[in-house]
Structures are given as structure tokens and as C-alpha cells.
Amino acid sequence: MIISRNDVGLPLPEASRFTSGTRRRIERALGRTVPAPSRTRDALRAAVRAVVAELLAASVAPDDVEPILRRLVVQAGIAHGVYTPSVVTQSPRWRQVEERVVRWSRYDMATVLDPADTPSAHRTRRRVRW
Picture 1 (cartoon, helix red, strand yellow):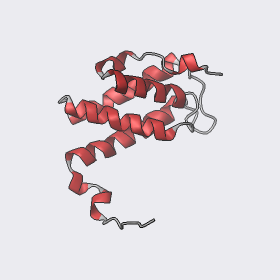
Picture 2 (cartoon, rainbow, N blue to C red):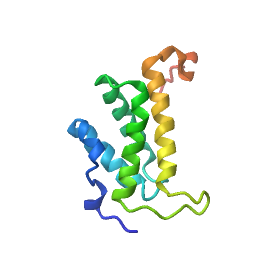
Picture 3 (cartoon, rainbow, N blue to C red):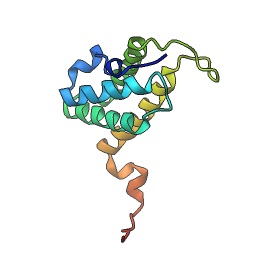
Picture 4 (cartoon, one colour):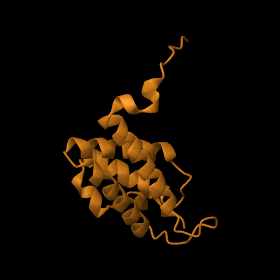
């Protein structure tokens, strides 16, 4: 399936709750990643971080963030018609993206809700001189 630049940012109904910048960011990242799960991982990671931060700032319960993100990925899979199963897992290709997004969102929520409990909080960073 070839995706043109115009098809990348298809509007997702679940994304209408976000600000315009976050909405465009998540729609575009999912539009590029869902058809080819190995593409644009960094853009999707940044978009998930922005969505989680915006949802938590809007007083959405932490238990409700994951289902919202799952619906976003499913809607992107439906909008882009990505129903062909993966050769390895035999599940739709957007399922890999969904698992990755949920894992990242759990980490981001843990970082925001309890920053002392994250793995990076236990390490001290060394300053690198250039």
C-alpha cells in the first residue's frame, strides 16, 4: 500500500479532544507508523509523550489514558485500511504499534505521577564535556 503525503494525516475521531498541535502530531505519527510499524518510531514516541501529558493535564484519570490511546491506534488502523496480518504474529500490523504505544504511555504516566520511581531517577547522569 502506497501512502501519499495527503493520506498521512487522516483525522481520527478520538483525537478531536486534543489541542490542534497535539492532534496533528499524533495523527501524522500514527498515519506514518501504522502502515509500516518500523518507521518513524521517534516521532510516534514524542507524540505519545505529548498526548499523555495533555490528558493528565486535563485531569483524565490515569486508568483512562491507556484505552484512549488504544482507540487512537485502532482508528488509525481502520482509517488507513491496515488489516493484513503480520507474517510473524498473524495479527493486524497496527497491533504492534498499539503494544508499543501502550508500553510508552505506561512509562510516561509513571514518570509524571511518581518521578522517583522511574529507572532513570535512580541513576546519576554524568556531565559530558565537548
